[in-house]
Length: 308
Image (cartoon, rainbow, N blue to C red; front, side, top):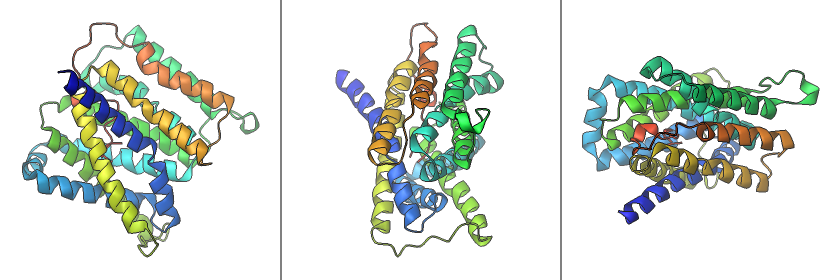
């Protein structure tokens, strides 16, 4: 039993680590002529094909349930928005704003699942928004509002991620492989469709595979994203939701440390304070009732690809 719990923790840590480092390949590929939308679609396509080949029954299950189509849509939006944001924006800022996700989840769970809106839920929302205002605050920019495309994509990506997790809760009876394949498929179809329209209109370039190391990067990170998502599914199914939430905050630590060391992010005092509030909100005001094992749906990370 203990070995299974350690494996569950290891699976969640693997997922968080891969996603905390994901800014590296997306920026590298963008510099090589492969826009983050194209990179997301290609990486998730390779991972999805590998999973479909290994578990052909998962594909049949995906096509049978309309709920899995909604999961694919939410996952596709999450991946397209988050991966594009970390490629063009300040990585720490993007990750912190994305992690407003649990706040949106409270609102969506009330609307879609009928979960009660308690005082603790209100405290989570208030704390998260105060943290966001600190992250967004700039004395020379007036009101603390999102001031860049990356900011808006990070916030919208977190909202899409919250929807992804609420849908997962409703689909807890579905097989793990089917859920994983559904999320990967969404992370292929939506980003590729958006990239195709933008490329056809001249807004972004068509993918260029001639750069040295680009193909190797795509293959390597396809494998890493698949392993990360499988780790998420395994770990979240075997640990209480509050434990899963705390472990997944490792992503913020990995993203912050790696981006700061790599010169891709600037650390300001308001960012640190606001980030602590955003990250504390989901679990400082968590329900204190005895924890029960979390279904995969309850994981704070349902991304296909921060998720695949």
